[in-house]
Amino acid sequence: QVQLVESGGGLVQPGGSLRLSCSASGSIFAINNMGWYRQAPGKQREFLARISRGASTSYADSVKGRFTISRDNAKNTVYLQMNSLKPEDTAVYYCYMSIGVPAWNDYWGQGTQVTVSS
Image (cartoon, rainbow, N blue to C red; front, side, top):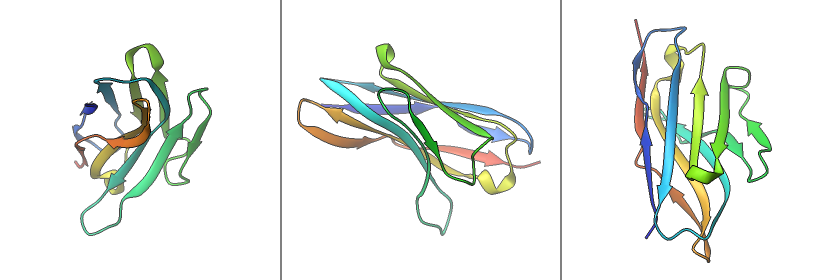
């Protein structure tokens, strides 16, 4: 059984920074893509960033230049460094990973709240 656990959310002032982490545990054969989404109240879940096993990255235009995704393959962990945060970044942030056990499936974290407010 695979489990993803997120950490690092919280309350931050506009212009501030936060770093989210998401670690996978369980019977893992391999991990391909890792990524982050978010969902604000009343809105659809929004793609933020993705990183391949080879560390190729892609970002949504809304966060490009402010957020940075990275991964530590030895720790089965993905990170999201968020800088220059804005009130509109307030949402629940979810990580996901494409994991082979060995059959490939997408797994999601439980979500962590990020609130940007003064």
